[in-house]
Length: 493
Picture 1 (cartoon, rainbow, N blue to C red):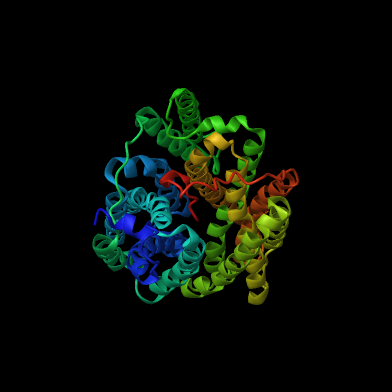
Picture 2: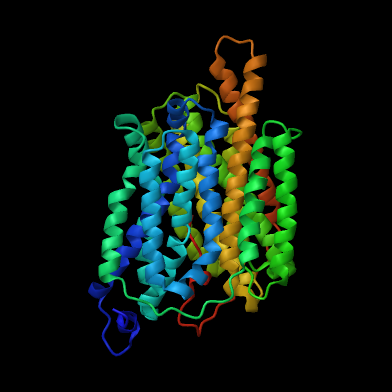
């Protein structure tokens, strides 16, 4: 199968979509499984907290640990592909993710679940960048748009389907099935990949930045721990230890990356003011978006009284908004540039979160779903638009190294947002319940959620202000290139 990739891209043979379907199916199955898992735990968190007899503050590490693990391995995707070959690494990543999923299903304690979720993240982090790069390699240049569009449909459907499946399994079967469902999908993906995925020649890997690979995860994990503990008490020993140790490790990491010839993350790109402004805007938006995404199912179940399955169905309205407006944003980007699209997107997000900050027990379901649709619409307009914008404004000689940086940084920011907001929500809820003197404690609980949504709305408003200064940039297109490397391909969240 070593020459299969040449056969796919060769201009001598006529294009046959029929030949492309089996390898494309292997890539879709792997990516679908990983993306599906980004939403299943969010809906299941209230049940997991109850079944394990622990707190939300402790169990949020099942989400935070997963995203930190993703961020740790994304920059290694290119090096691993060059060293061992894309097909081997893709299959090994799916196998590790599948094994991690099975172990999660049999976790007997919160600590075990967190460890196994980290294992999942280490496997899942490389699936999307390697999978997307392989699609570019096996697809003829003139058909890439159509094929990428075909690939996008199941990928966009994975998050809402994950929420619904998670709700169904938690309510009608048992929570381990939110992880066990990955096992048959993973096995099928591995078998299809072994049989049909072409073998791509391994390249000469660059020197591995070992020191950066060690310092980066230490810095980000300790900072996330400090932010998490700070949500309860910024003066506590845990918060101070995490922030100090993480801060020192981060400074060492930055020093190493700036001096290394082939760094794990290319930090020299921050010399561009436009790029620095753009990525800070991206971080602010991701913190507001993914911090809020975790809050929605918690509020629906813990305060509004909806079942896990009902919560999953309600959250579909957010996904529909994202899918519809992501398509609209993509079509408008080349015509009117990023600035007006992101401005409208941040207005949608800010408005939705400000409305959620005034949530009450008697707010009707249709109003909540309409608000979720508005939130999802802003998310659809902003997310991929910002990723494309960052590629366009990056210095041309560094554009190939931008995607690992942006994808890893976004995962780290998501972990910080989840850790900080869950810590704040837990601590604030306890305080509000202590001082509440009314007849219904749920009124105090929903007030705490409203205050937390106000915090995310403040982040979104900062994003709106930053979006006003987005500059119009000419695409940093590389029209003569046959296709991107693994490092070059944006990863969808």
